[in-house]
Length: 262
Image 1 (cartoon, rainbow, N blue to C red):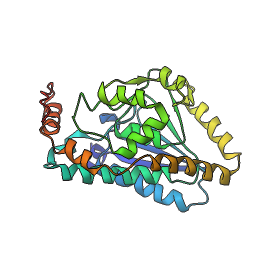
Image 2: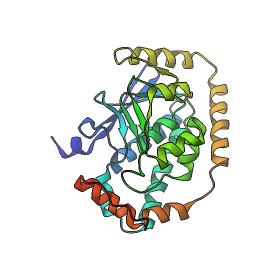
Image 3: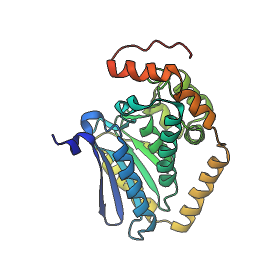
Image 4: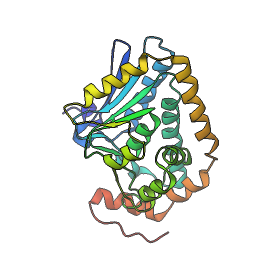
């Protein structure tokens, strides 16, 4: 396997007005590298000004995961809370770009959508998943870091504050049945039917008034942005903590972390 394939790619295909973006690193459950986030941002920049793209579908390669978060190996170089602030700013810029796309966006989830993967899926307008898919951000169990306030606001708007507390404070995963019942998912379909179900939704979206769709989704985005004040101090506190360094070390060493609250 080449270094490029090991690092993963974010692939793009466009057919009949529908762009399909595939997170392609199945050997790591499509965990995102810095380069993959940069590729995603570049694709979104192109979509914003391409009149031929009428809808975008995001999915993971391999059928086992949408995106299983950010590759934790990359956190080993973090030294201070400032590293965390810079990281969250980079991720937020990418997610905000996805949210600002003028055309409808759909996340096709097969399996795990965790951490950064959950943020990407939540930034999409609609989400579909296969039975057994798991959604969450179990950072209280794994890394001891935090999400940006903007991403917490998006999750809260999509799931409800109490479900987000379960994800972030209890490290619980939300199954596809509950996600469908609470409205986070548009539909749940069997693996052999998920592509057809997604295509049908995309065709419905493309048949409707694009200006109405654009201004409606941006109105909702502005409501979320209004509820997300700056909180650099919280990010700095989490990423600058000894618990975060312990979480990264423990995850890489495949052992249970020893949380000290420091």
